[in-house]
Length: 340
Image 1 (cartoon, rainbow, N blue to C red):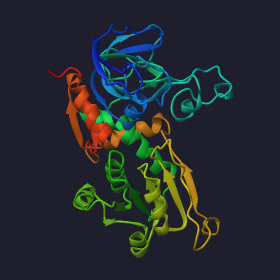
Image 2: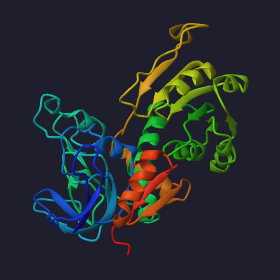
Image 3: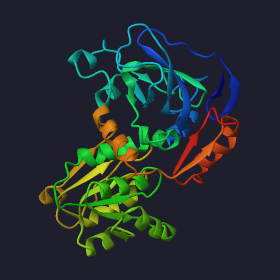
């Protein structure tokens, strides 16, 4: 089969012919119809995932089951499924021996987890073998290209909104109107919350309104002047902008960190009323479990949430990577391996 391969740290992606995997016990073999790109693909290529080369990246994977391995229940040939970054925990390490679920959020804390595009082959390929327990069924109302970004970008932002424990009448502010944030605005609005977009980019103001934002501001001071927000959902790794936005966080407000950065810490600015006196919280959030993933897929299946995508064939891997790494890909890139 054809697959994109990371051959070494900071080396260009290569399109290679590699053996087609088979469904081992407990696995399903999926014909990949769409595989979303995430900036984590860049970090993996730059060495953040350790010495994993050669490896095929991609953890926003959707397609059709064409083979079912021994012992699999609940999945059958012809099912439309997707998988995410962490397919399955090992079940044997000290963490797993606390009997947390082997899939979903807790699986991410297992040091020996089966991780798509890291410990196991990723989705930027024509076929992929996946742990059956790490798959979810796709709703009938969503096509493959729209489903792929929901497997990480949509999953991440929806988990952040759910972890914020939003209450009726509260306000949500989303900072970082990019690959995650453009979905977060739609999700917050679809859930019935007054939604504010925070962006320094003037060219994104109109787009934010089109996506459902009730208001658009440029910084924390403007957010405060608007009356503030109860939840600040951080979907960017520009933590300095997020720290500034806290100026507009209301008492009892929550900052939810969904953006990922390996290089800088998130800091709580001093000045004014102390953070703890405002009874504010900082919540770390990531993939929150397959029930959250199913929820966000259902929302996307109704048409209430739709990712903005660019599509590429596998042969366009170099161009796609360059656009992702340089920031020219403003929202989500998706490979369509079986498209001519």
